[in-house]
Image 1 (cartoon, one colour):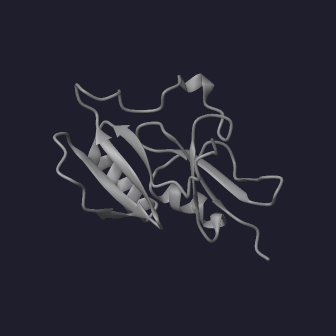
Image 2 (cartoon, helix red, strand yellow):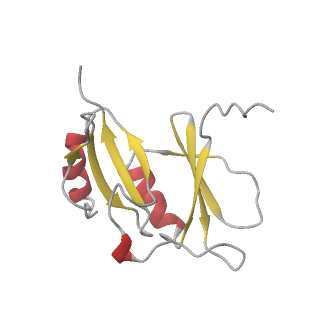
Image 3 (tube, one colour):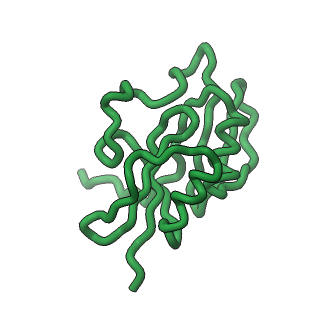
Length: 136
């Protein structure tokens, strides 16, 4: 039997404590846009970024708890559960995060392939990487 042929990532789902607080992070800071969401019987929001989406579920009795699944002492940006968003120029990220009161996790750094990485946490403690590829 042959392997499946996955063609991409459609969405990432996160459980959050406060939908509006998370909307501000994903839309007002990261620049995503709200898109229509089916009429599920629990609260949530969907955001579009390129061809992918971020799906947020408001924490409720039938969901997992909001936030990052590991205790804070295990958070080593880049070496823990995280998701990454690409943009054209990550050098602007520290100033934008600071202007919005979002703390970076460590200093911006270059991967061995030259990509510039900046790590922070969303309002519920999910580790977020924002990066840009080296300019040609």
